[in-house]
Image (cartoon, rainbow, N blue to C red):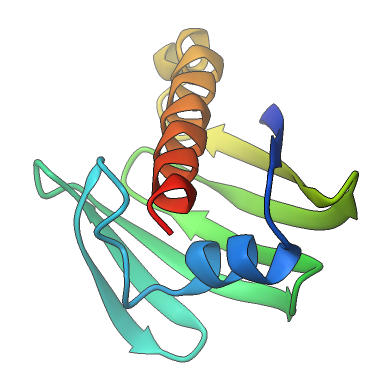
Length: 132
């Protein structure tokens, strides 16, 4: 499995960051998505701007502290975890993604791809918080 972790600080409380990250009905702040379809309260599908779909199954959701899910699409499977901590008057998040690619050649590129996606997610999240 390939693993990538990102940590970031935000100048607001955990509830604010949590509410943005976990509200799958309000995904417009994400620059990489065209839509999210809710299957039920624990399953959802994300669609990129090009229509590529990834399936998610929530495995843990402890408000303002921990959010986890399993991930599956045609290229990979894995898991994602988000930890939320109050720190220095704001919020620190630590997001970790672990994936197993289905095509061995993709192993050469997946870590860089994951880092790029995490950076985009954090940038989008910063922008969404700044607009509040």
